[in-house]
Image (cartoon, rainbow, N blue to C red; front, side, top):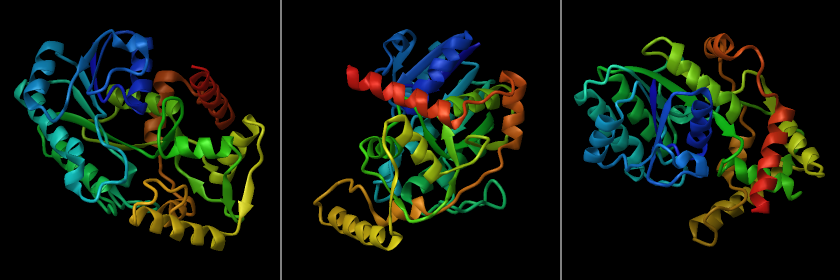
Length: 321
């Protein structure tokens, strides 16, 4: 069994490649950037998914049985869908290359919950409601896969965090670890958070056993609030969570909006968009994918306390380098 992982040097890709390598079989990680984990250089392919000829070459040489397509631009800073060519054109290139190569395995597209605006639960899997260019680009990627003749499964990560992560959840960890986090009032917002160790098991289970043509949200199978998350991170780092009135944070958010608009700050610590996300609950049904995970890995999952401890240990290791 040979797995090809595009975007294998990114946050989710690094963790997925690690899990696949631990389970055996051949794993080829393809990315424009070298691996973050030195051991992953074995089997690494330098690949830009915007280069169709390069994809054709990699697919022909690797001859994968499973393709995990994670290569993407994932920030929310783009002004238009055209800023996310990797997501749209890159996916079209991969679909075209696999189709022309006569690929008979399974393509797992790693999409995003933001194919619908935050807090919105679609009535069906193609009930798209994006409110950002990034979300629109992921809709286009899904549509390209759905329109293909390939055997595919779509996975939509929610708010994923853990070792090797970046913005925005690394920023959240950094802020809490530094004692600068201010929780908005008495809000007890439940978010669809997903520890990366749990989510990678969901991706592998989807690739192996999910129904062809199915769509799954991948996230922790248990709920926790933003406050609980912050309190666990704070406790692991000798801090306490403080609160601030929501009205005050709204003013700070407006100041962040202005600072970003006039170019004073590229990434203000608080904006109206970020505060709105913090105050918006999100829940998704993961029953089907979790049954597949249980069948493959057993009933145990990484709980919040253990996940925070593992991530804090990773932070400490990174800072010691």
